[in-house]
Length: 155
Image (tube, rainbow, N blue to C red; front, top):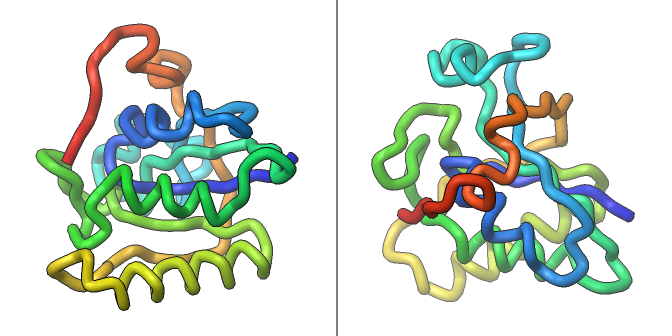
């Protein structure tokens, strides 16, 4: 099994994009890329910790490729919006790929370049591609939120 970590706005909606994908073994939502140890949702929402709301995806590379996960990431949000998705704004809602290996970094960079060359998007991509940092699991009520409560996020 391998891990991939993506930030693309509200983590509830991003988790929805991956949760039932064949080859995805599990997902969990949380916070990464910031400075505070064990941040809470309130800490992250303050915008003062530097964390992004993110989804950690555990996947079986024999069933689904990291490249396919990248495709899902690009499809589930607008990577041209700086520090926001839809009505949510702040650095915690930034678009970011947190890579776990040199191969993931290369795949993410190549994927971004392909999307940029495709001219599918009207604005420049602002997605960060950065090394994975400590992933702090969000509070239990955030995990699989839409499965438990209904609803959905969109941009």
